[in-house]
Length: 166
Image (tube, rainbow, N blue to C red; front, side, top):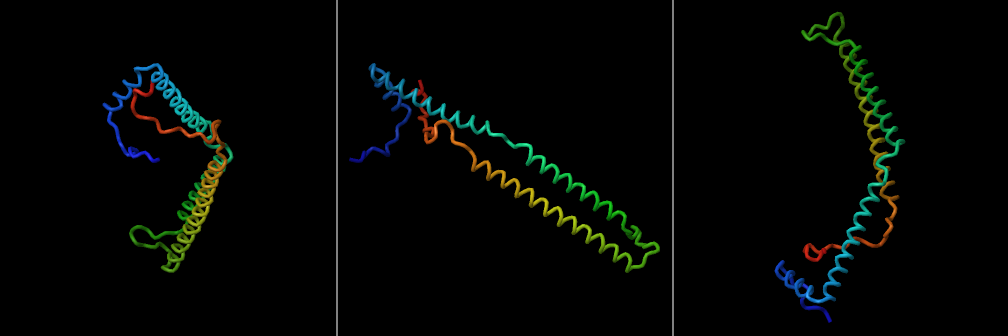
């Protein structure tokens, strides 16, 4: 038979009254102590699960070393592109082209643009590779997280009323 009072809510005064009534008997005091002990076990379980998560290594050296090498390679590509662009002839700020024709200046500008596009494509490719490595590492960690010592037991929602936590 279903309980008709399952949606009833109690206030702190109601809990205090019930606690006082239960504490009047030896059996009631035993019940509250046992209830608190079981809740502490649930708290302990939650703490053990958190400690297990902290024990997992954040990153082993291989992926971190690979990412560092990729970043160094990308930084070198940027430096080389900057140097290559600086070495190409440019028009002077006053608008004079020195001894270069308009066609030569146009060709130099196109060469600069092509060099930058190649570098951007190279960087984009390496960034995508690095992101894929991060996703694979995250998937590996999610899939390999072992169960804690109390598999199947989850911490219960504890009652917020402090009187029950003796």
